[in-house]
Image (cartoon, rainbow over all chains, first blue to last red; front, top):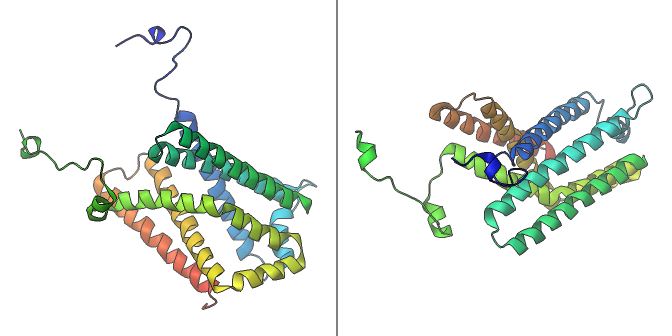
Length: 127
Length: 136
């Protein structure tokens, strides 16, 4: 076994654990979304009839004058986009081998997701 | 020495789409590939879902207009596919989180939990589908 210090002059440039951060993010964002899904589900089930006001209130309710509904929805959306980025990036890495095509698809994915976040936040915080 | 050590196991390398049709995945494999397919489906339809949300969220009349759009049978079918995608991704995801805790790792329980994921997500899709199509 080559000692780690011999691989790069300052640090390990290639090797294990580079995917650990993605692995952790994938799971943490999954739990955030799962919890938020259940929160929304309870909100919908305890609503008295499916009305516009009730639906809007799910995303705009406040707590101690804080826009908690909007904050939770924004956090869930950011989690979704980050989670999707890792998943879709893995799909491109598994199936698309030419580096140029892969880079192109990854950039497209980022634009797609960042666009979705901006669109959602724009609608959500306009209320 | 056991028999399996001397007898070469069949290998499936560089399988073509034709082989893919004959290659029988175990239950856990089916859940795994469907997890990927459902995730990709949700990713591709994300702007559509946000557009529907935007419509329903901004105004009372938009909320009514969204109900009309969702009333369209083709939109209903797309939504049904997305509901399945969300539920499968959700259930399979919970299974993976449990597996991460090293629970149910042996072959038998893994196959059982995979069947459970497929069954529960399809059953829930049926429930939401009946609600969506106004049967119940």
